[in-house]
Image (cartoon, rainbow, N blue to C red; front, side, top):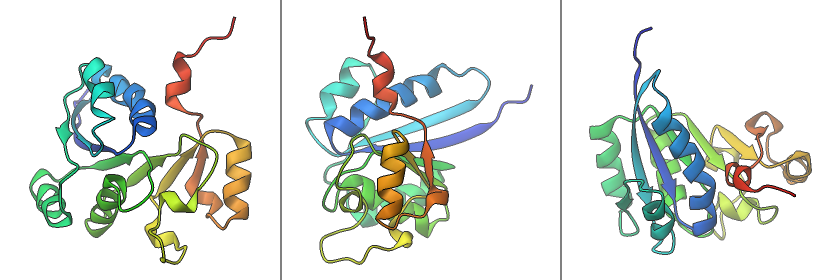
Amino acid sequence: MSQLNYLIVIASQDPGGAEALVPIVKSIEKDQNVDIRLKVLVGGKYSYPIFEKENIEFEKAENLTQEALVELFKSAKPSLVITATSFGFSLDKKVLRVAKQFNIPTISLIDFWCNYWRRFILSGEEKKAEYLPDKIVVIDKIMEQEMTKLGFPRKRLKILGCPSFEKFKIG
């Protein structure tokens, strides 16, 4: 079996998003069939302990400018971008916008059932598909239906649950 070589940029601002991304990072790190390198960027200081506890290497990126991200993408040439979602001009929005400039496929995870558009646009911006990632991982059918009613393109939504929920056990 031939080895594939990819660089995936993972970006998270807030602790909830970090929790959702950790199982994905762990799964990628375990996969022996592909040579995948990860560049984990973390924008919020409250997210650092989540990655530290899991022994995941990351770059503290809260002060990373848009220009610095462009340079990082030019030199690193990532194959895929995976982000959590946050409000404001957060790291995930900066990373998504740069990835779009370079035509890099993008995936974002939503970890909670509200404020869907606020996760992808800034205050005062129009709700446009151009601000959205190529795919949005939603938790369940309820979230998919709510987002579709709000104008999100259904073809971009994929119900996969929330990776951080996998560690919960009932009973």
